[in-house]
Length: 86
Image 1: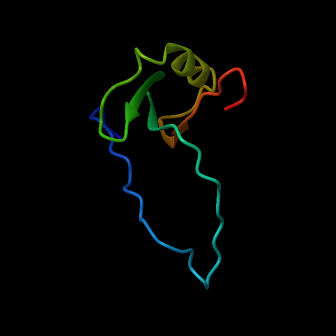
Image 2: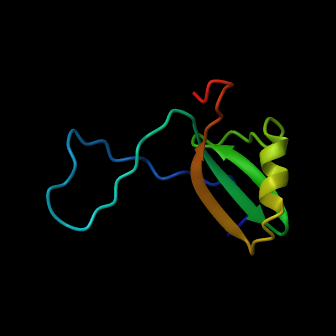
């Protein structure tokens, strides 16, 4: 894993779920697709288009740094909830 900007895997849009095989489904919540790169002890947060959002989400970066991972790339969705839970 180098220091270049990571790219998220593109989703595969389907109109209905597969009817065979072993699949696990999850509810899609609105939010931002984010990649968190843990590299040489530092966290960088990137959008799916490669924009560095580390400075925009310092609280998330600090929380992820506490995990003390080996060099890693985490792929997920950043979603915040308002006062009413939405």
